[in-house]
Length: 256
Image (cartoon, rainbow, N blue to C red; front, side, top):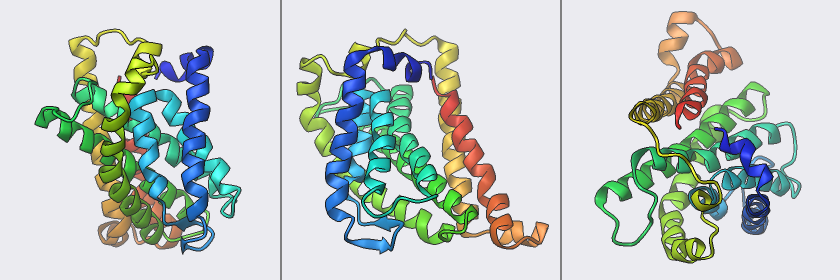
């Protein structure tokens, strides 16, 4: 995670953060007027942008997604839930490039090996669902929206646009971004990972995936937790989805 701090001393990475945020906001605002959950969620084709910027610009894409979503909230959805929106969208821009790098070589092209395609889709899917789980969990705890409604909608929206438009945009622009010297591994070169680091990253990806499954699984079907702990309301959500959220964060930190 050291690149999250190092990038702020690189002028190009700072500029790419602003570019990522601007792209996100530009596509967010027109659809703010098509609400799904009034004041909290809307149809969001812009969900394709964070994973694309993540895989192109690395940590700049992560911060761009977080700040872009926050700026977008000023156009109708700003409130206490924006804090969790910031965190969730940061993860949506952070997880894809970390997971993909842990599974495959970062050379995006139309004729990639099947392994690379699967790694790309998995990386985007984990980021998309982590975003939905974190935001849904946070807004349930502060009493703004039920986890099942918000988390499921965000995950669905992110998956639809992230897994379809995301790869199309990424593969269309990657060669131009790399030729311009704006690919994040050229701006912030990373050391070759040791065998131990690769194993640790793989373990982190597995824990992250387990966290997503637990958070969404028990968050939507808390029956086993309710029967064993006799909880209701926010306490039930915290006990059922909370452990999965912690695993998402822990797994994300483990990925080198």
